[in-house]
Length: 242
Image (cartoon, rainbow, N blue to C red; front, side):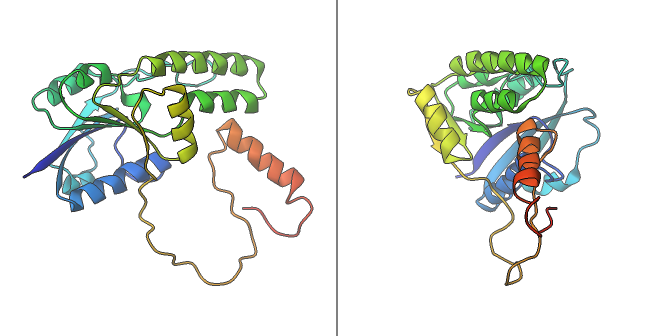
């Protein structure tokens, strides 16, 4: 029997140059290899500029123009599930194939799609309430702390209203899965590690002579961690931090 799957994401998962795009792209590869017919839906600024590298893994590809994102003065997206589009709901309503939402920021049509008798999976990349709380604690800006606190409240309200029927919420870390399950005990919560292209260890043997710190320094948590490493660890040892 031919198996089909709709995948809805906030942006084209190409190139796979960030953690979310890497997970989506290599998940698509694995699903394609398993014989799943993928119908990809994503938002973009120019629907006419579709990355053709995705075609080999998809039965169909549907780009949609993204609307103006609602952000606050701190540059933080304060609109949970904001990438909702009636065009996606209409396209998906033509069948009853399962639907995979890649991230809470593209669940604007979740309530409508989940109401149908179909399986729905939501890939949750963070426990967003905890994430905003950590950002608030890490930020050194007073007004940003206020706004982050508001974002956390908005996200909690949004998460509390997420549908449960036919829905499964899948996290990439056990800790986030546990905290979300504790906060929403009636919800189907699962843990599934990120998909990556790295299946074997190819590094050279031995010990290197430097430490590599990999992280987005626009994130206050990552910036705070990098500063702590520089001042508390690498300031006293003769090993370079890259």
